[in-house]
Length: 381
Image 1 (spheres, rainbow, N blue to C red):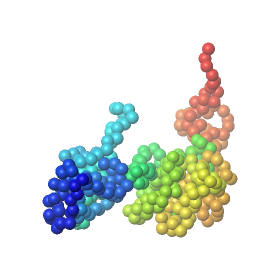
Image 2: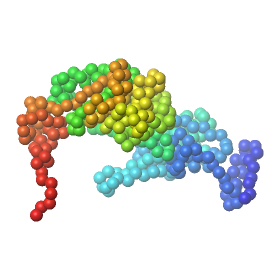
Image 3: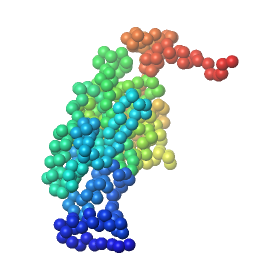
Image 4: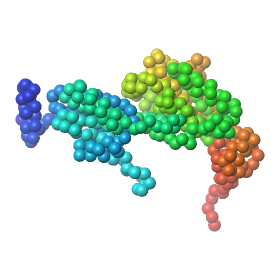
């Protein structure tokens, strides 16, 4: 195989590179780091960027935020070089969404964008910064309505850790009277104390315990809306608990803290029993990771509040997680007594079948709950 050297002045090398790339006998190997896709970029230049800049000067500037990819693609469709198009499961219900866009605005001028990040490449640092600022200002989404909740879904993959913004509706934020109907007067008093702790303390671990349907997730939606202006909420799905022990997870939080230094971070781990149980061979590293993030030396820098929801009794949780001073809050979400449940049901226009205690889910279901409990299992004859 024929090989060509690049020990030339930069201007001569720039003229030679296109000829080399077009020579069928020359093999050019580019190191694209961990990037496994042609469109994805993360913090590393993707394939079109590397091919354009070669060994020449390359500078990048990154800006985080919330961006309108539909408008961005529509305004620059002629410069769209690489993209991912997300189609809905059912046609006609939700429009397709853009993701991972790469624009080539000039021979050495690129913009990569997703919903939460813009990354610009140019041959000078000033050009990259100007492009990043201009693109960011033009396509930043307007601020969400006051008291509308949102969170960032954490995803892991070949491109490292990513976040997807999930916006919720105004109905998820309860008025004081509505909150008391759902959780009782004592629940409101507890909520005010807990919200104050999340604001005044810089880190800590909280555990929400309760049977399915008792309102743990419903409460978290309200909390996201009420504290959305000062706090930044993240959600780690149950299937992603393994990310806790990934060395890159610390780097992810370091980067998030760098770009959002004015926000208080809250990380939600739902149905996290497997990560909190008394340490064994299968979860030892996960328990240790949660301890370090919530109360270890890393906690002083990362400043994370971790909220874990569990369906099992807290007596099964690793004792180290329940140590006073480390545990910011442990709240048990129980059933509403009949009088409380009846008041809520009346407001919802529901009818309760029996005089007994109810979970929130059962109150919302009303008489349908009784039908589900008494249904027969078997085959009709």
